[in-house]
Amino acid sequence: MANIKFHLGEELPLEMHKVRMVQRLDLVPIERRLKAIEEAGNNTFLLFNKDIYLDMLTDSGVNAMSDKQTASMLVVDDSYAGSATFTRLKDKLNEIFGKEYFLPVHQGRAAENLLSMALVKKGTYVPMNYHFTTTKAHIMVNGGEVLELHMPEALNPISTEPFKGNLNLEELQKLIDKVGADKIAFIRIEAGTNLIGGQPVALDNYIETSQIAKKYNIPFIIDASLLADNLHFIKTREEKYKKHSIREITRLLSDTADIVYFSARKLGHVRGGGIITNDQGTYKKLLEMLPLYEGFSTYGGMSTREMEAMTIGLDETMDEEMINQGPIFIKYMVEELVKLGIPVITPPGGLGVHLDAMAFLPHVPKEQYRAGSLGAAMYIASGVRGMERGTISEERNPDGSDHIAAVELLRLALPRRVFTLSQVKYTIDRLAWLYENRELIGGLEFYEEPKVLRFFFGKLRPTSNWQEKLVEKFKADFGESL
Image (tube, rainbow, N blue to C red; front, side):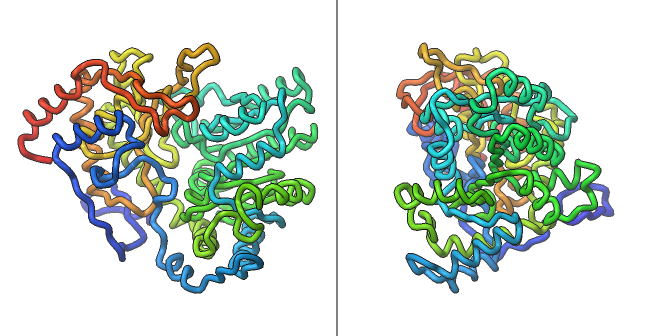
């Protein structure tokens, strides 16, 4: 996004793209919003699009595609095997990342599944900067244990630390000394820690992690799903790399890893994913599993149209003026919320804006899912769908008790090139009203709970009639306004 000074003094993000296709949105009345969240079991995942005004659930698979990506889908080679589309994508990945071998998969968690089955054994450990829900589940299913070796500042909601996603190298060394390198299946860094506010990782942290991994012959894997945002933050926040191009930073980062995997629903803006490596042995091991779980080696569960669009999307990811749009919109929204005193994770990260539900709703008992309550309240007040990233997103402890999350966040994702500034300002306005009326918000409790990944399908109910009271206050303040 362009660095433009406005004559009238207001500081606004200026989009470097224009809208050429639109989708109709509806903002249903608050009475319908209350009914809709009840029908969804107070789980925003279970809301239907017809009842949603702004969908800020995720940035996965909902980013806007460019005109060039759309056009590329018309020249696709949809051969089942040996597709020229696959070759174009493979060559583009090699050009950008310098990795020779490529395995396509239908999305990022498919890559996690294959890697966990291939590398994780019972009794092994996987240290990482922070877990992601599906990553942790796949490792646990295969008998491994996830160890979060994050920096102390990572869990501090209010901070000026530019790289809160860094792996704690001191703790990594202690772990290796304690359990031995042979007990570590692999080291994982997530390029932009999803569950603690999309906080980035410094390039020097990747480099130093790689040095330790190589010293002890431990595989080093990077989850590059949120790489685009992380590249922007390295270039703008890490002084020694400010004069490097995005392509140069990408290659330096990729060279640190033995394996890079990604969800193209985030990186490349299509539905798919992939695993890339220069390790022929690992590649052949994974290749044997690919047809069984995903598809043949030249499509791997993806449609070839998506693969063609991914090739263009990856090229566009190397454009600073494309990848900075998300972080700059997020920065604008975070700074406006801070001015209003609304508790939000700082510094602004990638992926979306992350509200601190612990500080927003301190009166709600932690066992009553503060972030889930805030998500339900936000939808009722605005029609905006966010996503709980807190205790509901955790698995229960072996004894059946809740594993209380270290942070309770409501994520308002800002998919790239999707929302307008007026829509962002509307969201800020409704958050301001909700914060002023936060004492009305109460807790939630499960009445239908899956055993695994409960945040996808679990259903909850309010612990009191607080939602009806919230609607009454809204109508008193806004009248017939939506």
